[in-house]
Length: 403
Length: 114
Image (tube, rainbow over all chains, first blue to last red):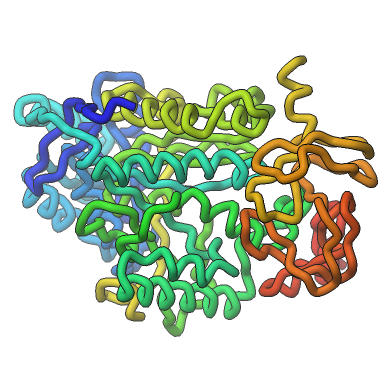
């Protein structure tokens, strides 16, 4: 593989570099979502790259707010427009001020002040046009390379091929990116049940091993207390017999490198290497009902840790993408790939039949990641699949999992 | 059509595994094994659904089911080489509910819909 790969990224004040230069339209309560989404739809198929995200609750929550702040500070975001209704807890002007601190052009508007749906949509469209003009004039392009790249991976709609091929290729790409000095983040610790010793032994230092053990034990207590394991009837019908078996199939996507540490949601990796993202709630009086609700939440967690590109492994097939960071969908099932080729970017099944080696597929997937960094659109981007999910949850304010 | 027939085989992901996975719906009989297998073929006792596991050696009751080189289940009865391995002959060390799921559909049987 060519190890001296570079591309043109977007310089940000905090020193990070982006692979996209998006205008992020953010709503602060469900009541403001319609206006925000209408603005997003208006700019589809234009030369202005607009993504919409938001939080649905009226009462705020530190965990959710941390995610919104991480999205504002994300290097793929160039400018921000915050839309509120006007009576909710989250403060649109404060969010816009954070963006300005990052030297990102930003605006906010409150629908109650702007005079309702029609005038707010018109005003917001005009603001987006102005933000775009400011972005065009001020964004600096800079050379970017693999050691500045942050990549995230998760899996959903898994089948028997995910652990045999899809996640295996992703794990191999993770190893390669870490070897090149890049950063790779995996999550889904709830799918590590039964793998305690293996997980702990992957810690880069003894202290990291202890962090991993704490994270594992918290996850196991959580799964026991809500009596929910991340395994479903469809998994069993598809041939998986136990959560341990599913765990290992998911865990192989972390590759084989030592784990540098544990991140909580909305934390960026403090240095390069392989990181585990812990999205399990910390113990609190409200813990029942706090679950990992869907794949989009997992993808959003990875985005909020600064991932530029996401690898999403599926076996049965999935269609989702993500706001802010491009999603490359990978399957190990050739039948799924044929059936859903409009949605799925990469097929890894040839290693099962012996038609391709793991090394060949690793190289091909790595090239696809680089092309995406260079601006090529993934299938989810082409279809405008830009899902997001920002939940109410609780994690303690500290650093890594002392909760 | 050539590609279709290529996945009519079993796949063993780790050399130490005592199970292989069907890459397609397979008939009973001698089947080729891909991946890192010690045995290049296996005599499968009954037809297998794709994605399901088959023992590549005798596994005694209470012994570990090994896949990916790690323990993924515990045998609840003796399992012959070539036999289907699933909820009817092994169980999780963690999730007690899964042992009560319907063997073929995976649907829960311990909750009331009436």
